[in-house]
Image 1 (cartoon, rainbow, N blue to C red):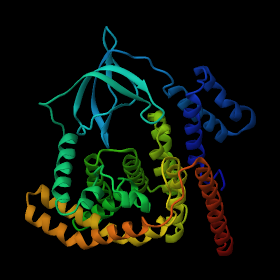
Image 2 (image 1 turned 135 degrees about the vertical axis):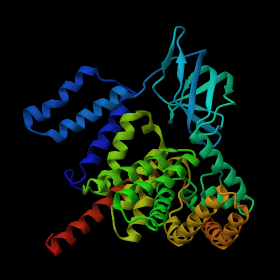
Image 3 (image 1 turned 180 degrees about the vertical axis):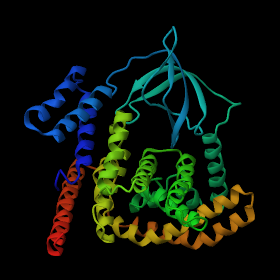
Image 4 (image 1 turned 60 degrees about the horizontal axis):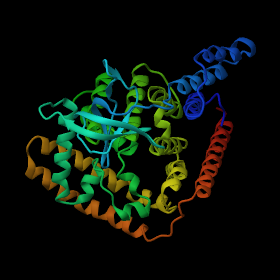
Length: 420
């Protein structure tokens, strides 16, 4: 892999490393001046930028905060299973101040809900780096926002669709769990990520193209439903990454700028780490980025699925068992899942339009496809799995690096044989 070919990935790595080091040691702010040394003395601007991004995230990451028995207020920005994430303000005894980082609340609220609580901030080892230990907790009951209305409409539809088959709500942003999907390695199709957002973007593009052929208008309007879906599904990190990537790719298309997809993903990651350095403690953050890089690294359909699996496997092995046969399971269910996602989108639109009978009819038409996916998950859940272990994680990580090197070599050989 040539550094010059994937410069954004190089800088992305520097930003991650800076944030991780920042939890142990923070460099003095004046050290940023030293980032120009590689350029000034050795004419190496790329190394200067690497050091600059390293130092920026190193300085921005939250190392140690002691806030106890304080008042907090904020708006829910994302929802996860049994919990919510908020970036609150706190009262220091004289005035309200911005906290500057995310805090987890072990209460599941709707997106856009205003929360007020009193309590302590406690340190954790994952993202968000702090959670609130509350002694008093309240929410605004007479306030609604566009984001909260969108989330509520999706939640109502998920409840509506689950009456036909619980699988539907799982695929449309629910936080439910299913043991067969976990053991089969297919649980990733429940986690709202690039797959869901990309499928809905394709659906939106097709619908918009029926009404307009104007390139700029089509690119802009096609982003509408994926954005609504990300809000309605809880705005988790993988879905936000995928949505930002779509926006960035659309901007590049509008400006007629050609950029390697790996660099696009890495630019998104770089921006997210700078804006919120604490996300480097989220395993889902690494899973979504490296799985996406693995998928994009090859244009071959089979190899891209292998790359996606290897990109996420090192992190899966840290928290649970890994089913290596999930590569084949993913290939089998890929098309049925796309059909169900398209159908759920149509059903949701009909539901919003109060055409509940037609919405339910679409769900029943989709039922055979859903049952097929569930059958595949059940079948592959019976296959042997690799245990959760750091050694397994390291082995998958090394395998992923080897995979990238092999695919890069194949790509280089093709370019040489074609004379490009």
